[in-house]
Image (cartoon, rainbow, N blue to C red; front, side, top):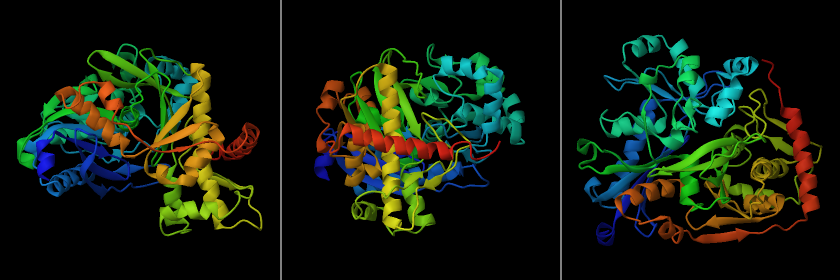
Amino acid sequence: MKDSKMSKIVMALDQGTTSSRTILFSEKGEIVADANAPLACHYPQSGWVEQDPQEIWTSQSQTIRQALKKAALTMKDIAALGITNQRETTIAWKKNTGEAIAPAINWQCRRTAEYCDELKEEGFDRLLRNRTGLVTDPYFSGTKMRWILENVRVARELAEQGNLCFGTVDSWLIWQLTNGQAHVTEISNASRTMVFNINECLWDDEILAKFGIPIETLPEVKPSSGIIAEINPELFGGSAPIAGVAGDQQAALFGQACFETGMAKNTYGTGCFMISNTGSEPVKSKHGLLTTIAWQIDQEITYALEGSVFIAGALLQWLRDGMQLFADVSETQKMAESVSDSGGVFVVPAFVGLGAPHWDPYARGTIVGLSRDTNRNHIVRASLEAIAFQSAEVLQSIAKDTGQEIMELRIDGGAAANDFLCSFQADVLGLHVKRPQILETTAMGAAFLAGLSVGVWQDQEQISKLWKQEKMFSPNISREDSARMMEGWERAVERAKEWVVS
């Protein structure tokens, strides 16, 4: 590890839904060391998803120590630390002690669906859409904060005492890393709360008043790249600057070097998230997408259009753990390729409702087209196809909103390692799908943002040269055939909609 110590090492924390990771990157953008720890989700009732805030922190801190140990480095050897995180997940804690007052409400949680319906009935959703760029859905943090204030016994009292902090996961990690010295969030994370005005780039007083959220409970908003705070030296035997933060999908867009308007990436994680750089002006969506902030560097803000699919890799986990169709997700490629097609089967994984472009919290998962000839390989293939179909719907919506044809799609995330999925994605999209050599682009984006602010990398042009393609997938079917398959998918989706009666 002597050479690693000679170079500038950037640490990236990648706090996701099902795991916490720490990855050390060299100035060449190569992985020096990494560590991973699993993270549990809890489902106290139908549609509810929670996590333990303390477990989020302890799992993350555990991986920091492990990565440093693997690389034979200390925190003193780290040039900068970047953070990327699962977005919208909401945590409330006491300001004086740092103690969480309730479980974290996960981004997938649907407990505020009825309140979102009330907002729509009142027409308040139009104001939310215009100011935040978001649809009125339980996905986002604002209604989660309101729920905590209304339902956690001590929350309102603490807020009135000025002793309550709200934050997304980036805020929670920074609070822990600085021993409570910094209550901050980063602007792309703020843009996912549904209480942040993305046009004026500040917390929106009218929305906060509507939700009953005191502005004093919210963190200060910071740019994506720039020194935010110093790590408490007592934690890891030294300090380093926290110098770059972005929500996981924005970080992946940056890590994929999608710096030009019109470039897009898709991340196949627990959910599936496609995001396209739209430049310096927000583009309002008329096709069910979210207008969001991609990142802020110095005073320059870059916007994006995003389509969020709630269930992608989680579908494969369910097939493995719930249905026990295979022992390891890596088996799915061979299983899918063992049959010539899905046999007319479509799987719609609306376990927690449908995200973009449908936004139906009352949809539920369904399998249609079963026949006596259907076997588990057909269901596995249909499940992988479902991930691609959902992504294709989002890309089509991006093209309609921007009026621009997307020429290629850069992909990452765990399921991007599956060649069948990548090839089928190229088929249904009718364009080139490019997979990079390093799939950890979310963590890489956080590292790039942090390294930029301390001079490890000089500019985005230098970062672009570090992106390297591992494999390109090209479409192998006609546009007529892909359109026919999409029509079948759309019929299946209609059967999953509004399944739960509110």
